[in-house]
Image (cartoon, rainbow, N blue to C red; front, side, top):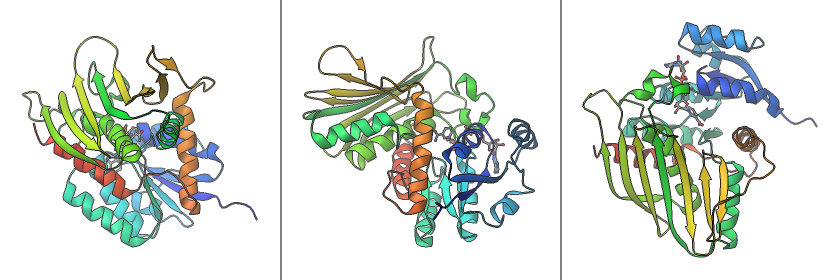
Length: 323
Ligand SMILES: NC(=O)c1ccc[n+]([C@@H]2O[C@H](COP(=O)([O-])OP(=O)(O)OC[C@H]3O[C@@H](n4cnc5c(N)ncnc54)[C@H](O)[C@@H]3O)[C@@H](O)[C@H]2O)c1
């Protein structure tokens, strides 16, 4: 029997929605039935760049499209709950962007609702299936790192939002943006996934004078599975951006840079450990969609669910609230 093809409705046609439009059709078992965005400009641009895409009349009409199996939600955080609830009400599986939202009470309520529905659900914490992360999981399982001394997350952005995100004005704002929600979320998810649920030991966040503007600095100490975890992030200053996640082991340490690039050290200089993967980012997007299909099939998979994303969001919002 032929394998089922899942029909996907895409709400939100910005940076990440368009990434899904570019990658879902190639997965082979995901068929995009249509897309919709609040912005007429985003709808027109998507229609121009993806001529095969059917633009729906409204989000409601899109979600109600007959035969739709899955609703992907790629809008800014505050609107995730609206569409996730609409998808559940229509009996569709949900694939939601991170963070689940901004208000913790609302995200807790949403998580319970999604879980109670029994529908397949996943959150796009994009490192879940990345090759470097799979290597980290394997190294932790086979003991090749030795004893874990700690885990460090270091982030620096010359400006925020980054240049390629200029159209996403919400990212600059304190209400739902900032690099902690946008980027640290991915690495706090890794801590949760690799080491176990984390506890916040101490934190401080610094904000500019403009009450609408997102944080410029965060510093947090956490503990996960008995391992000390440090998060240090900052914005401002000339120089290349830094996105780095390190597991420090007594025998071997592993490091991700630029989200997806894996490095290894046995005490000497870092050596690149993903030879042969031409584009680690694209490779990860594809592996993530393969895992999503496994989730929809009901097979074993590494996709994070709403509960996991909620644990991460609780940490992020606690850190941001210290400012
Ligand atoms: N998992 C990842 O790797 C990853 C990467 C980038 C962004 N994201 C997440 O994806 C989400 C969207 O980010 P983005 O970078 O695509 O932002 P974006 O601003 O580029 O795109 C968001 C789109 O949503 C539309 N929109 C806003 N409010 C809406 C609403 N109420 N209904 C329908 N459409 C609405 C906007 O018009 C815009 O086109 C965020 O939660 C972000 O954190 C995740």
